[in-house]
Image 1 (spheres, helix red, strand yellow):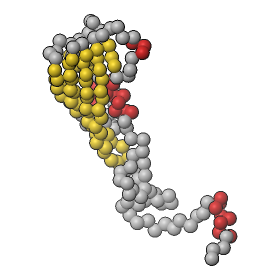
Image 2 (cartoon, one colour; image 1 turned 90 degrees about the vertical axis):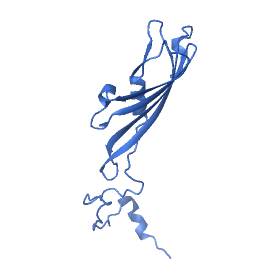
Image 3 (cartoon, one colour; image 1 turned 180 degrees about the vertical axis):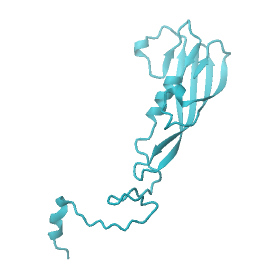
Image 4 (cartoon, one colour; image 1 turned 180 degrees about the horizontal axis):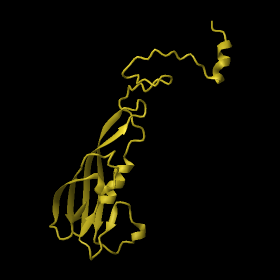
Length: 166
């Protein structure tokens, strides 16, 4: 996602993009749909304030029942580009970039890609009430009612059986 930012009039500008996941080096099996982005650019003097909202669908298996599911993702990325070359590049904030004098575009591809990957869920659950799989027969407990009897006791808890209850 490359945007020409230098030379724009002061004020707010909006750009829309629809790009393939392969342009972001994202796994096609997981990101099978286009990435749709809206970029709002506010030009104030030598500073360019960008807010990128990107949406896509992430396909993955549920960690409990192993059923395939799709997660709608929407992430926001904020950046500031400046023409102020007096700033020390070593001590910049992550969201502040210096726009070199010989460049008039901002390449947002890697920044948006990293933000997408960082915001992927750590645990993928199809629904809060997901029952998962039977540990004995492997049946999906969301679909069928398993007849397996779970009478195995962890040997560490075996001594508790000897306690009397009143």
